[in-house]
Length: 323
Image (tube, rainbow, N blue to C red; front, side, top):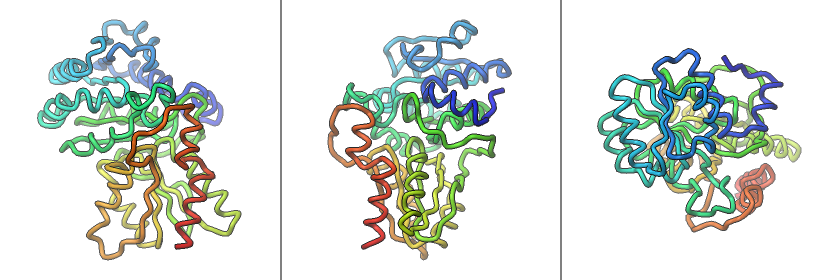
């Protein structure tokens, strides 16, 4: 079984989220005989080549047909298999949205839909390939669990947890090769339970996916200017960890959510919707991608453009504290 250590964390970081998903699936196959993995002609892009070669009878490529991908995956799941199906985030969540809604949601079939290359990481392929609305779409489906791992180590944790989780799930993979490391040792990961990464007193930064690492760095930068920031990894967007969120609301006067997703319908919206009726509700600032069609360009250029870097997050937090 794959284990998180300082050495493996560095190695996995170089591989990136897609390659690490493939490694996690290959590792899972050694003790999950009922595993079946599907791809919409993206076996290589999903990091699944080694799994496909080692377990050819447990891998199915349906071709560039995401609606069919979900239909076939659902039928296999109905026969009792543990099913993972992957494609680029906008295609598996929006092109196949009706099939996801009816087969995974309404029929409650045990398929783990994996959106690769979500957020802005597809860079020069532009808006057709950006996964900016996928959380909003999947959150809206009753019974759907939505998880966005913080780094490559958490991808391993998520795949393992998803395999024994009963019900439909969307796993959102953000970031690319040489992604920042959040975890360098084993830790307790549970779907639906947020993780406290850093304690603070002035502001709570709630993040997930690729935004956890820069949020931690932003907290370090803020500390240098006298601001104490807590950082929380809400890897599960649905169901949201209301107990942890309640504790945060009781302890802070400002919450800043950070996500590589549209500001509409994602983590920030989930937090705001949850706290809206609470008596103790701190002020909230939501950082993410604006409700416009974005630019095309290098991934790190785009993150910087939209303020989704450590410096950008620290600047936004500082401005929020001044208001």
